[in-house]
Length: 169
Length: 358
Image 1 (cartoon, helix red, strand yellow):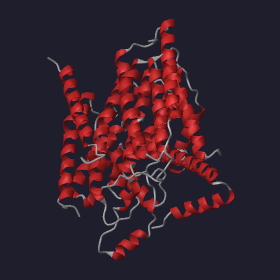
Image 2: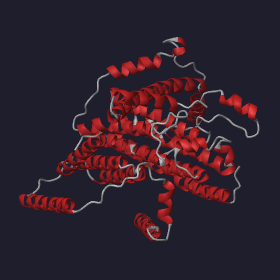
Image 3: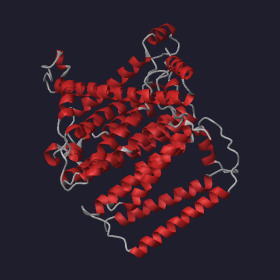
């Protein structure tokens, strides 16, 4: 196995993601956790870019890093007071969490090592946006128009719900 | 037009001749990163000098005149002054986030800056989802501003950051809608392709009415998104001291300051690229002699001329209009610009479907 630039980039990204994820769950301050989560999302976007799927990478940055993290930070700023620190974990909870994590890791590793992957048939170069757009809006086989519409109805319901809650009586 | 791709390809072949492909790509990435940061700094310095001179002109003053001819070295001296200043650390603040926040803002700004095509063959990030990536990159800066406000442990900073964040999130929508209007017209999201499609007329002429409306909306929303002009509430000195960067000093403040100015340039550069043809010279179909004369001017001069023209336009707006209140800012966006933008998008779709554009 020879070391290529691709491999090094992947290793750096993977290390970055792992370290940030661990920091995100171990830190005591909630805003720092949100920041580490932002780093994890950056790393994931980096992996998408490395796979040459720049559409998903850009969407990851736009929706998760630019949207959801901002939402988290905003709600933290509005609700928690300064110097808010997480209380210390009880021993039982800590052990239960650790066991669940290790079990999940075991299952993932088992599935990944057991599974016979198809030989990588990469089409180098970017996927044209036109193709993605047609796939999203087509009703044929491998078309995503139904989930697309269902999600838009869900979002509409969320908007109306938000207005109902925020409205002054 | 001269294609800079020839030079970059030549460098690539020379490098691969002496080293492996991977090492060459790595070296090229490092060189391009350094060039990008250098260009970033140079543009920031030019922008700050321009701001001071234009502001002075609008207020019937002279502006900086002492250091260098016409005060041209003043800004460079200011940069060195800023670099030597002490970085004050605040007690009872979250030090990690406090030090991190300016770099997130700069990261977002540099990433957006890398999307702009400067001349033919001089594109750094040229994805075929370039427009989407640009919007994604510029939306990250909000996180940095919110973190800066929170971690400073000061009420002024926090209120400034909240206002700034709310304003930027809102106006991002209008920027996106007006860019989308042009994407409908071009059916591509790649910046280099968008420029190439304007060879027979810039989009502001080709798309006529909806393109002009989109251009105006883009200028207003872009101005608000970079927290400038009549929308610089985050920095309203009299009520909030300096907004989210009240507590910052030295180069950390400098980073916010530089990012703000370069963001203004980025907004103008994107406006120049998608509405005014980017590096594409002014071509009028039919007049071949005129087109040949225009082609003689290099692409990057066209680009910088257009971009700085829009910068000047935005500075004119900034020093002319009084500041808005926060509720007026949000009303303008949600009750006027977004509905107009959506209708304008529909109008552009009608124009494209019935082939009413040039």
